Amino acid sequence: MTAANPPASAPSAQTSRADSPRDADAARTSHFIRQAVDSDLEAGQYARRVWSGKPGPAVLQLGSPPDAAPIRTRFPPEPNGYLHIGHAKSICLNFGLALDYAGRCHMRFDDTNPVKEDQEYVDGILDTVRWLGFTWDTGGEDNLYFASDYFGWFYEIAEHLVGTGHAYVDSQPADEMRARRGTLTEPGTDSPFRGRSPEESLALLREMRAGAHAEGTHVLRAKIDMASPNVTMRDPVLYRIRFAHHHRTGDAWCIYPMYDFAHPLSDALENVTHSLCTLEFEDHRPLYDWLLERAAEGGFFQRPLPRQIEFARLNMTYTVTSKRKLQELVQSGSVDGWDDPRMPTIVALRRRGYTPESIRLFAERIGVSKAHQWVDPSVLEQALRDDLDAKAARAFAVLDPLRLELVNFPETLEEPCTAPVHPHHPDRGLRHFPLTRELWIEREDFQAQPQKGFFRLFPGNKVRLKHGFVIECTGFEADADGRVTKVLASYFPDSKSGTPGADGYKVKGNIHWVSARHGVPAEVRMYERLFLEAHPDAGGRDYRESINPQAKRIVQAILEPGLATAGADARFQFERHGYFVADRIDHRPEAPVFNLSVTLKDSWGARK
Image 1: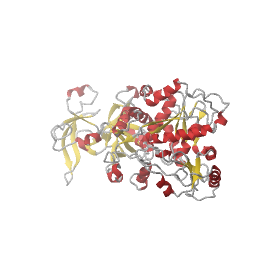
Image 2: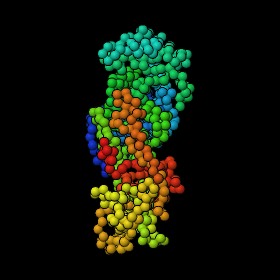
Image 3: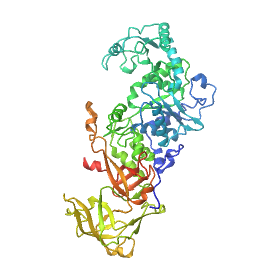
Image 4: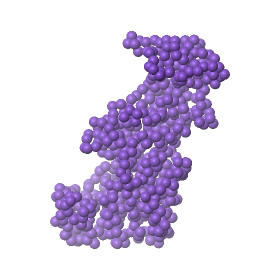
């Protein structure tokens, strides 16, 4: 092969969604969030905001120039695991909207739980977002932030809430607190400590901050309404004691804010205009607004305040995306790690051969709505096919090799054959491979006793070796168990493809092949869906009982000789089989390893 498909590289950090025709079309697609943003911009809702160039409360923003960004969004993962395909939807939405409106999207880590977080996940998340083609470094701003950098401001606001009677320190045991919270149909009951004076609560909060109390002895709660029909508003916990080492702040803190407290305050400190959340946070929006209003009343934030808007999360069949369950799969050895190509994590999809463009295309196709929906993996798979069809070089690969001997072909002859690198892009050149006396063909291309409608090799039948000669099967050899070990055939020297004599032969079968002398042995990993059931964890079932035992199969294949130089991440269409990628971890030229990315058509759906 003289021309090959180079490894697909990540798009530039400055890639916008208008860089391709598909992305340009998607940029014009309207949805309810875009309509809300348009409405806010037309009303001049955020036109008077000022921005110092870095996060901070109002006292640090006042006197600064107007914010050059019409809108600010944010992608705020917790660094407690690797991102999965569901996060891709949020990444594309938040960064995509910012690009469309010439705004900014902040990359923020909500790292307020030191027990589960780690720098490994921080690095992995940053790499994933970059690989998907997005950046937080635009317009001269480096908008990479950590909620832990705001701990001091969070605490100031907490003291303000206590001092103004909007929060109190509760000393109930956790089980009593839960019992008093009420149910969806019954109101909660006030804590016996709800009447604590601001002075006493403030003293206790400072003692908690100083490490004077054990974990679980006290919490800080907002004082809202224990009879609220929205359970979230029944005096939610804002701070808890936790003696744990934080990956950024070390041991400087022993009280940590809850997500519902840190999230809205982080948005306001960063001048975020539109805080886009999944629907499970819809009931939390009143608390989001309540906290921001109380802090704004205290002069901490400029108005207008951030606006939270909820959208439906991505639910995919034959998949689990719970971080706990994904971690269980890794720890139990059910998969080979977070980047196992059977996993729904983005690092796994990348290793399987998915491209950033295909994942962005998938996110665009599923759209944005408030309606819960289940998406079949075939939608994601089709996005990859549509992206790779125009990109991937073609190649011959025999996945279940059966030896074919051309009995009348000279033993030392090597007949040069050529084929296009890509059938629709002649400018990409030709690939070259020799035809020799002994070849490898697919075992399924031969039947000793052909079924009706079988047009490939069987005794007495003629087929064309693709890009080569017409041959006629003259017999076969088998072992003691009756398993065919070799097919025998004669070739017709005047039938080579591309020569005048080729037109004189009319055959129905056309099979691919690889020279036994020059073929490249390779390990090929064949992947299917990890679960056999569409909803493996529905109804509280053990999702592991639905694991597909055939989700990974390893075959020893023979590839055309040009693939000997393929580098890691190089993508090819193995003709008749599907799209494959050289494994980015295990592949070496002297020991090639290829992963099945996706078949040429939805073979899974045909089997259901």
